[in-house]
Each structure stands twice: as structure tokens, then as C-alpha cells.
Length: 130
Image (cartoon, rainbow, N blue to C red; front, side, top):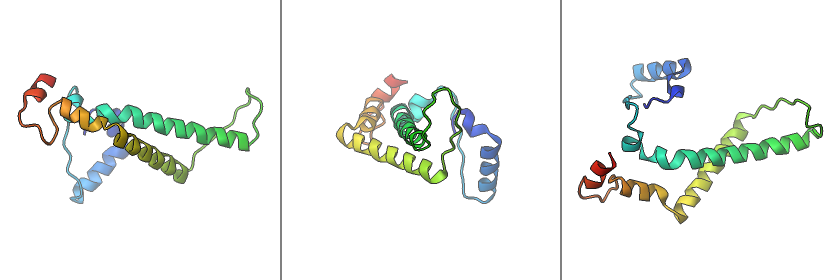
């Protein structure tokens, strides 16, 4: 578990305690500042995947606003996305990201650049990365 504040909410702590007690989870802690060394995918995936999710969410929101026929830009409307719609948005973003990776494999390239690729024979690049 890294230092992301979302990992330390009461709900997450309760889930961790419960699943640890059930023997269904093992937790390792990652000190701050080690993301680039230990969580290489975070460097490549997070920004693009989050952007894809946001774009699809805004498309969902725009369609709902049009459906509700909200023409006054100063009016206030509360929108709440249902869980199945949010799951669909996330799944679509993952599909798009995976398609993008087939065309331009940035994850593979990043692992290779930092010396963590499966075929790296020495730790020279990893040490230089640190």
C-alpha cells in the first residue's frame, strides 16, 4: 500500500482489517517517494486512464443534462451517477487504454527504461533510474 490518502480512510482500514483477519489479504507498505521505483505502472497508467474516465463521465453527464432539457446555464442540477453506469465508464476506459497500449506499448517501454523489464539482464538501468 502506498501513501495515497484514499488508502487510509476508515472504510479502507475496516476492509483491510476484515480481510486480513479472514486470511484473504496480505498487505505491504511502500514508503513515500518510491513510486517511480516500485510502482512503474502508476507512472504510465494513472494519468491516461483517469483522463479517459473523466471524458466518459462528462459525456454521460452532458447526455443526462440534455435529456433533462436543462437550458438555463445558471440553474443548479444535481446529478448522481448510478453504479452500473460508473462501472461501464471504467470498463470502457480500460478497454480504450488497452487498445492504446497495443498500438503504443508505453508500459512495456517504461519498464524497459527503468531496468525492470522481464528481459533485463543487469540492474544498471534500475540503479541509474534510482
